[in-house]
Length: 196
Length: 196
Image (cartoon, rainbow over all chains, first blue to last red; front, side):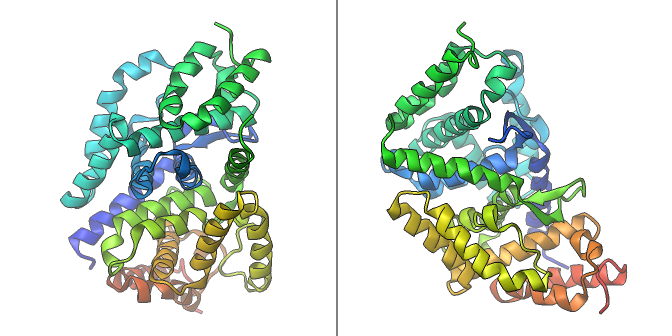
């Protein structure tokens, strides 16, 4: 019989598998299907390793911790579409309850540690959080760009909505911001992002 | 225009998206579909954070680096089924060529760094590599266990094949080895792992 501690850790890892069934609104770059939140989380980890030099000395190991757990709450709360104002009103409460349950599967010390990592990601206060959130926004832009418009086109998202959503990139990854603006301008010109 | 350096980094991240389309033989825990290599890589990162205490002081940030890049070569080389002896003869050469091309998309310094991380994972020489590889084996066992047999049953894998495949868990995660043996015994008894 495994110890109670190991049993809880294994139960948490098994529960986490469900994140692979949570679809986001952004498509794969080939447009073949929606991206799920588990593979998205991996892609952000790779982005953190690749783009760390733009993070102003950010603590990359901490960023990887934040990114690994940042979407786990979606197992219960679902992926809340960034541009769905109504759903975003209830998002915080739904996700708080989800975090209590999901991290609560772990032994208490680990539950507290990973729950704190999720809260840090959500709070946008530390450099690691701001960098991780900026990658989260940038990655969605790259997915939509490669898919020819993706969720922007499908949901008739406007330029000002995209600019607001991408604002964390401007502050945390200023060297990458011109690329973001260029993509937005380009997709406005072809009508894939709505003028207003 | 973004710098050549940033353009290469973005091109690498876009190329990496293809890992989400590489199916493994192991199913999701609910058996609904095969797991893909991108979401699998995320799951291993979470396992590294959750099970680090069994790693004998392993360098967890390095483990996360290894795990994040460990399957990227599959974009070109495909996922080679662990129990397919013929495919494993050509695996090393196919993956070497893939690593040259895929990491080569990056600026030279980063290409060298991440290529070295992949080689370290493959070599089983460092503690980080042995820990990461043990997680890779353990996670497949948990997926098959939850799915009621998964790739073991589908491909009539035998007890001795599973034991050989799981050997890295015995050496790198000795405290978890009894759990592995218990799962193997249980699935042998119900015939989901073949006797020989």
